[in-house]
Amino acid sequence: MDRHTPVSPFDLDQPALYARWRAAKLASHPRRAEELIVDVADPRALTPTERQAMLALCARTNMAVYRSPVTVEDKALPRLLGQQLGLHRLDANWLADEDGISQIAVSADEEGGPRADFIPYTNRPIKWHTDGYYHPQARRIEGMILHCVRNAGEGGVSGLVDHEMIYLALRDAKPEWVRALMTPDAMTIPARTDENGVARPAQSGPVFYLRPDGGLQMRYTARTRSIEWKNDAVTREAVAFIEQLLAGNPPWLFRLLLQPGMGIVANNVPHERSSFTDDPQQPRLLYRARYLDPVRDERVAAPQEEVAA
Ligand SMILES: [Fe+2]
Image 1 (cartoon, protein in one colour):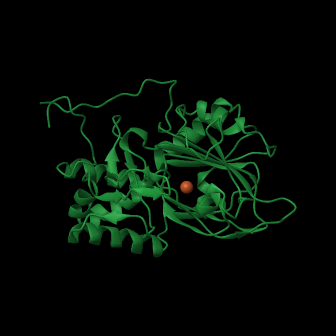
Image 2 (cartoon, rainbow, N blue to C red; image 1 turned 90 degrees about the horizontal axis):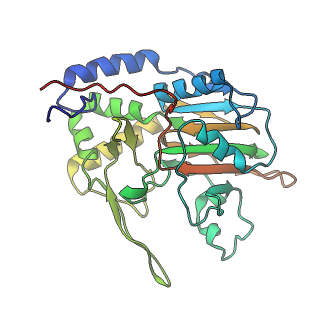
Image 3 (tube, helix red, strand yellow; image 1 turned 90 degrees about the vertical axis):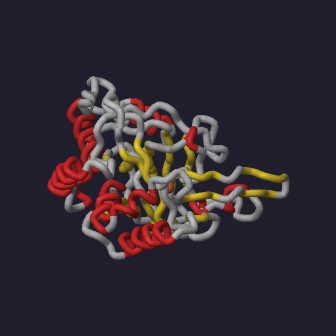
């Protein structure tokens, strides 16, 4: 490590720093899903207090849930909310509408349409994943907003975990698992082909990586199809550990049902969704925005700690 490398608790060679970070993390982590919720009058124009509360939660636990009375269909809402929280670079998903905001609803074109192939556009459960885990490094998704316009008649419960708690559990159990999951070839998404040839090349990447600002990000999917984990014992053990950890409902796994006007802002934390049944009169509709930026407070200069030579 040269003298300009910021010290990081996520460095396996910094056990004392990790111990301090770990103690602070465990002491400050929310105990209940309700602690994630910030009441806001209008997500499109947060008051300074609302904005600070959301930023503070994201800094503490990589996510915040807002609850508002704004239930109108306004696709500008996630974009306007994101701009206040450092989220600017929207990912251009080929299934998103042109403004980069996806409308998540059960697809009408169940037969043959491109969306019918993708679980988000069905009422089926979605396993644990981070958004865009299959993206190349240049388009890593670091921030996301999920805004509920209408909830389902029944079901559609979101599960959320702070990936730093997964990291902590892994490192406590076996630091070698963390090392394995930080290698650049830990996880490979095979190329996806369609009748026209290659639609997406193979993508390899780490499960955990550090952003330039020192923050920890995670790329993950619990899907077993269309994913190749690095074929060594330590990687397989680490992946199995994460699966068991999440299946065991740890106390830091939060479940909540987004009601109309509510939404999630997060540093792309792992999330899942239960299956649901729509009320045909008012089918479930969520807006999803994915960003190449993490949540950050742009109105203060972030101090950066440096290690001495
Ligand atoms: Fe997702």
